[in-house]
Length: 239
Image 1 (cartoon, one colour):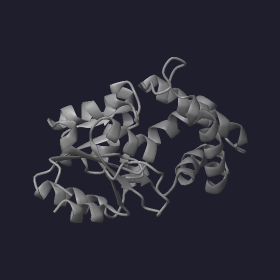
Image 2 (tube, helix red, strand yellow):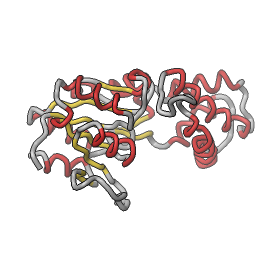
Image 3 (tube, one colour):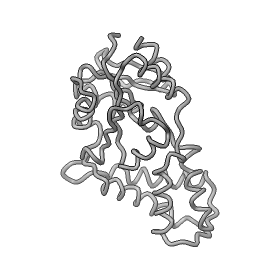
Image 4 (cartoon, one colour):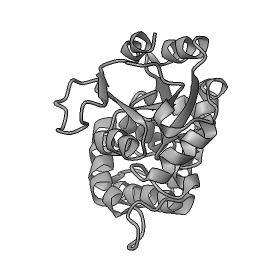
């Protein structure tokens, strides 16, 4: 492949992940208030709430609309699904949810994939500019600082601040602007086919699908989609 001038990275499940798990973070916060649910139970209830709430993000006029308030409301709905299951909880919903929301805004609730830091260091050494392009709320800024990623990035573009979520073109256009590149000079790397691959291609960027678990690729891409199983492969491809 021809070497791009810049790289755009998705955040969650690309560079970083919740550690040790969503259920464990929920359990740690819940135990502070006397709750006895296990991480496995909490993870199940969380994903039940996610399945009900995540598709309802946005507005009736624009399903891809995003803002800090829209994202906060989604997390609130998920937590309201979990809360009634919490035996022994000695705090009201607002107190418990406030602590939970704060926990997910700290670097300590996340970890970098083992291949992430080496990839960023190698790409920086080659003079490639980099940015984060993520469907996230403003808490990600603190997470990125806490994990030591900020020094690598020309910008951190978040849906809640741009106003629309990937695959909306605005996210990729703003990322290219932050990188001071034309879209075709940027390779976007992410784990989600619809948001990352299709969104980047539609915006004129090149796309790289990070497929860590070896899933079958959907049809499409017209030969323009790179596929990798680790960020180490990306380093080899951009030499």
